[in-house]
Image 1 (cartoon, rainbow, N blue to C red):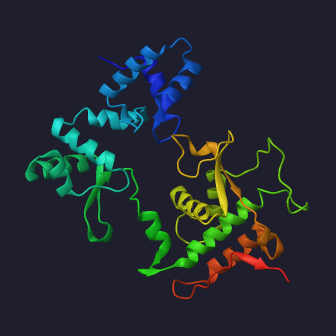
Image 2 (image 1 turned 90 degrees about the vertical axis):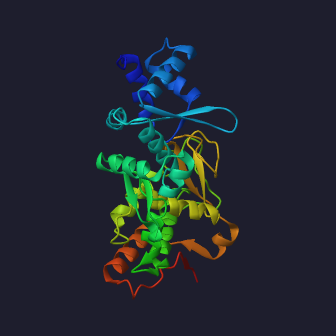
Image 3 (image 1 turned 180 degrees about the vertical axis):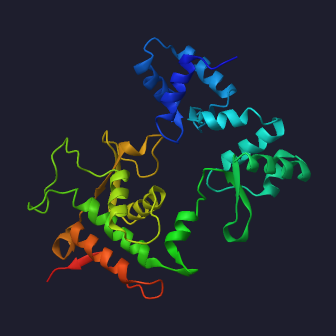
Length: 309
């Protein structure tokens, strides 16, 4: 039995929405754009077929909705060669996502004896389906192409094993300034806002591009790093996250793609009276200069704001 053309089309639709899980209702809406005559029943049959081929995975929410996430063709092909025990362990590791899972927990949850678990893990490591990581001297297993949950945080917060808050503060300064100067009209009243339909609010990708071009640190800054920084700014009440359709949601994306999320700076009265965000260009110049001069032991904090008067 082979994957049909319609099934490949649905798979491409799902994988085209990014790496997250997508609601089946949203999938149906997207599929109808390319396969207009697809009924709900037909879609369910296609999704079940894709599940059987290992091309998608399925998850149920607390309110009994079903979400789907696509696997690549390469991964699905490798999964076809796993036996039942290997596949069970693979799914357990896959569900651990960026946290990873210890071998002892795999044994407890699968009830598979240690020697068999170890053999299964070795086989999947050899096939580059999973990898072994050792955060904080603890051996964990996760999917081969997944980055550990604390990897970004540890790279940003620590230099030579010591806390390095300077990098984090510099990134917060840069990200906030970049978002602020795209959230309000220039040279206008302090209460002025952009008209409805304004499309200049930055997305995650735009903020990442700004940071990467700045060379704020010698570390390779990735999207996951900046997403963490933006979440901190949201928690501090300096920015808000909205979907391009206008709905606000600080907690989750509900399966939406990052390209649909925009970030907007918040402005307070007290800020208008005394504190003004440093223009993005000046922040870039200041941070770049400091980045070139500093060492791990001689870094100096970069102020988030310049005090007028």
